[in-house]
Image 1 (cartoon, rainbow, N blue to C red):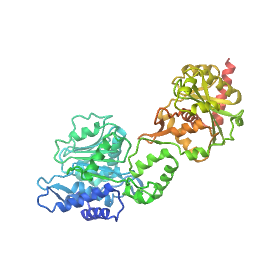
Image 2: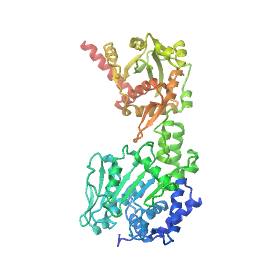
Image 3: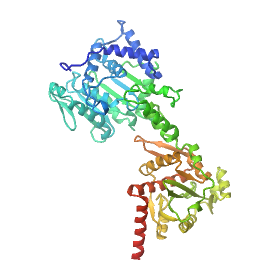
Image 4: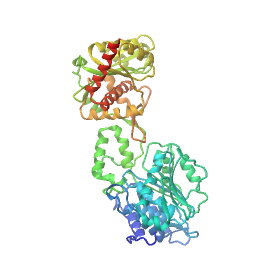
Length: 572
């Protein structure tokens, strides 16, 4: 921005020094970061040859870095202060904007892929890049988009850019830029910067100068990427800016682009117009070792705090369901969507063979049912709460024919021990479960019965007629995520107790945890023979306890339930 002052730095020199420090080992880095730096250094040497097509334009690299540093931070402890690019950011910006074609003077790189964990200022850098490309790149009628599959995701980078622009009044006045609710535009050049989502916009008729796609790993389809890529054809030096953390969908557009970058960096494929850099740990690194965390986090000690990483790492070691989240979001490691859920040593430690359900005679309990008819096990759990501790006892049901013909020899053993109830024929006879539930009600105060409505419509109607408070708990992420996390926390804090039943422990060990893009978890099984029905019932019971706590204290909740029953009795 001509006329706007900035500290004079040797940005190309800083970029080169950063690359040399990475390649020499002075700065710790993973193999792909090293490869990206080595590529730049090798290109600088090759550029001295007259036959080489490209040259490094130090002035252009310096200009881009200076422009970005004239915009302010808008979040956190640096809010209101000017951006000061770290060496790794100077390296990326210098390489992307510095390399140019000797003949045309146009930028060499047209696609940029940056893979870096959370908290490394991805959005801040992307927002400044968007403003630069829209209004300071010398492109008439520039169209710059922050693109995503949803409105909310598309607005993240754009909203930061809005705030940056508003806090830079000299930029607005000097370049005639106006910040509106839905776009930032420049009347004189007809240039604009807007959020763009497949959810809320028509993706036709675009003429893209710069497309910024944040968190590419979250894209379930390639539609937005393909539209942006094909809409750059009419521009002389367009830029597709892809920035993301790692994910789990190896069949998606993000992993496709990552694989392409890996081929370029490993020398398998040549593409002079594609720049990529990946910050992660190496495949043989121990992710629990603090010595490797800096490899994945270039802002380590700046906006990424070692004590925060250590806290999350400790949690991930204790809670397997948290491991994927830690690995992808903090160390940028691609994982499978499903991983083992419960830390079984902690689960086993919660078992007490001396614990008996008769110890709770007359106590309040929530019952939960996961019904099945043929192959899966029907499960009935009673869960008691005392002094913020939870106690679970289960009963399980299968048809006799399933027990006799199943490859799982444990079924017969459990049936002989009385742990597994078998019903005649090849379909579970729900009357056994009804009788057991009535027997429970004669010994304990059953507050309510949580159930999955699938296969349970007639059953629930009959039980309601018997006076039970039947509550539907559908097996959705919304209903299951928080109770699953709560159960993990209870187990790790020794506030969950079971009687050591091998059926429930087996089912717990079968649960794999599916993590979605919003960090929700959901129980799954890897194979059909790995039953998890008892765990599903347990999660439903905890769902009801948690809902009652959100509505008020448990005692208040129980009082309201009892009052409703008394009022109903009076009416009858």
